[in-house]
Length: 59
View 1 (cartoon, rainbow, N blue to C red):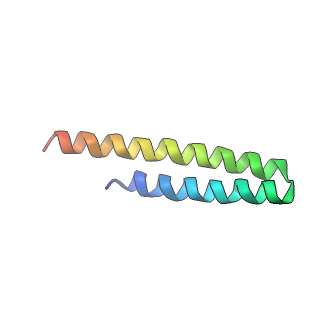
View 2 (view 1 turned 90 degrees about the horizontal axis):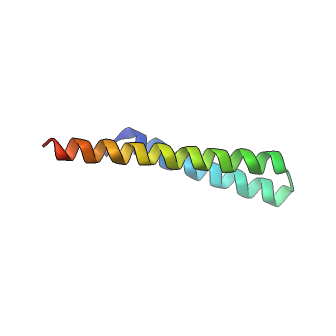
């Protein structure tokens, strides 16, 4: 498993928590930051998945 997948998953979870905290407190800035982190984590996770697939294809 590529480290980008692990870091991406962690970043996505962190973003989800931050987004939920923003919703709970009514802080739209924190909520938006959480959505952004979650999206960035998903992208990073996808990149890691592509790296894994490429590495597996070369074996």
